Length: 249
Image (tube, rainbow, N blue to C red):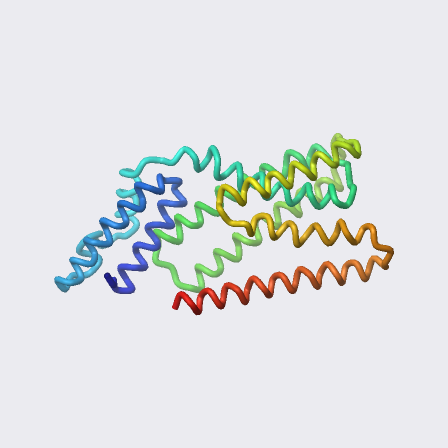
């Protein structure tokens, strides 16, 4: 079954819209399969996608959204796991560097930024999927989305330097517990998403740092080694994706 580019684009946008609306995946898949059949039949009879969805894709998406149930796992499991995974990267950096001080502002501000980022990201997905935007506008919105959380995190760092808030200093034992907890989070994310990249990436980032701590070389050399490993790993991922894309096409 081969659909026109217009119909396939609409189905892709609808899938993104419903995903960003935290709808049940099973219901979404069934609905999209049924809609794909309708679109195919319409096209075989010389009709356009508007014959099925009407002139307003956005209005049709809202109608479909109201018919599909909300997936409670999204906010109870997926979003907390994303937040924990992101938070694990932050605390792992400090823990490996043996920085055992945590300000109250950072401990409360970073999770808030994670929540705001998730809400902004899914609002952006819904907006782009439901509206016909030019590539220039879409690219601009994604760039702004990339800048927003970075600016918020920098804002927290600057505020943490300028505003005195209570500081929690943990023991060396608790620092070890933090590292173990972060590792468990990475493994849990990998098992849930069935993607070992969630374990491989932090392993590539942090294991060399731990090893280099016990090697007597200049700090500049350590930095070069770590950056070289990250660059090689990133290039390997890009090449792997390109090969996979070539195979799929």
